[in-house]
Amino acid sequence: MKNQYFGDVRDLFKYDLIQRILKEISYLEKFTFIPMLTKYDPKGKDGNERDFDGAKKDGRPGTNNKELMKLLEKKKQVEADKRDFTEIEDYFNSEDIGVDIYKGHEYFDHGRRDEYFENIPEDLLRNYLVFVDPDNGLKIKNSGEKHLLYDDVKKLYERMDEDSILMIYQHFPREKHIEYLCRRASELKKLTEDLPIYISDNEIIFFLLTKNDELRNQLERIISRYKRDYRKRIIIGNVNYNGM
Image 1 (tube, one colour):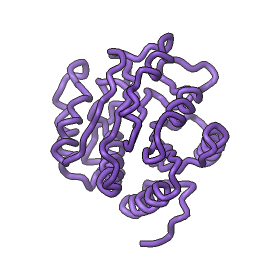
Image 2 (cartoon, helix red, strand yellow):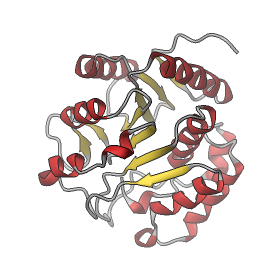
Image 3 (cartoon, rainbow, N blue to C red):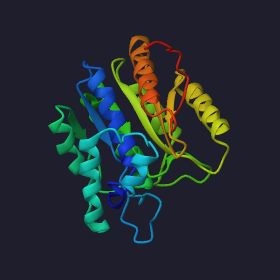
Image 4 (cartoon, rainbow, N blue to C red):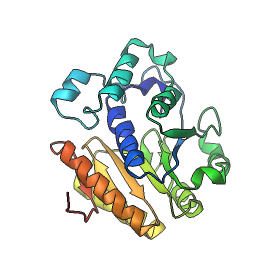
């Protein structure tokens, strides 16, 4: 992720979904934010969509959250190189949700990847929603600082306790969406022996993994209800819940 993209309309989906999960699963203590922050790119345009009125008309996920909309819309007035994603901590604190932002290095360094992940304290992987936010998402053929490797996922998953959730941010690549979602879900299952739940707005995806069957059932209910709030935009997968 990049500071310059803080306040993009995609952040509505990201932070609103995190808020919904933490509000509805009360025994999760906080969320651990693992940002994989990369340097400012003056040519970067991928995360700079800031038409909030258009987002509301299109029914994009998160647009029902008026306070979050108000906060993120203000970032349009801030120069790109002055934005700071850590300001989201104040918003979550105002909603009585605790946040621990992991600050392993100032910027994520592909060459120091193992050190970055190994230095995440154990207590940030206990009874938490553990959210990993790479620039682009999961590994590709030529992975770099913008990507989360499967080895990183495996180590985080193995270290977190059974009362935690691992949540991964992913951009859609130029592939057929359903085929891509099924392929990634299958690869993550082989890696962790846990079939991930996924939720997408056809632009970005969140994969969610947990070792706990009861926790998974709660997640399924939350994801199903979230889809009903934004049914025109949301795709979900590996969810068996059909109730109200």
